[in-house]
Image 1 (cartoon, rainbow, N blue to C red):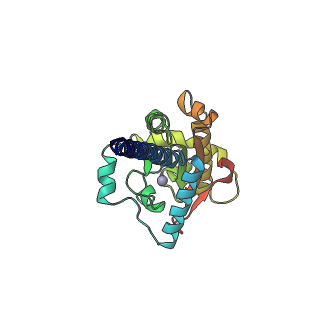
Image 2 (cartoon, rainbow, N blue to C red; image 1 turned 45 degrees about the vertical axis):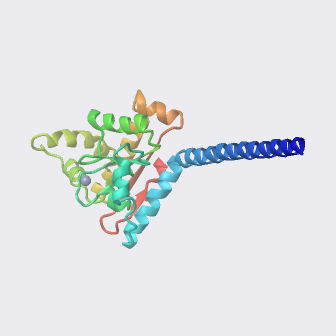
Length: 238
Ligand SMILES: [Zn+2]
């Protein structure tokens, strides 16, 4: 009887051990699955997905059907420990072109550099390099806009007061390049300026050019319409 009892107990212990083993293996597999999913979610942010997100956001703006993503208290707290924006925008300071609103984005979504005429001098380049290299943002958008005051000043020529002349100097090549084209002089210069800044950023050494070359960064250009709220992506920059 004793021997049979001992055998039964041994079998029970073995069974329990097996269950514990199965439990541990299941836990490890589950952890691995959760980890992989997390990795996949982070890896999913590409230049293409970021661009698609901006296009969708702009269509909400055009239709005035905002989703107001990422504006909760939870999001705010979550971001205190770090940021992972999916797009960088170099846009004009103009109050009518706020990137978070025209792309329907929230807290921590966009890394933005705003300067009149959306030009890129050393300080702007430094900010954009930080976003691309240290924050690993895969998409950089140069965004011009209709009726830009800075571009208008450059088109009209003459002497600009104070430090505004520094902006006009940076915009003058776009005015020269678009001179003689049919259509509105300011809108032609706005488009030419975006295209030239896109080219400047793509070839900016040593950081941005290298990231573009290795496929880690995509630089595109667009123009915003004050009439409709629509962002038109410039085909030559896509
Ligand atoms: Zn402007």
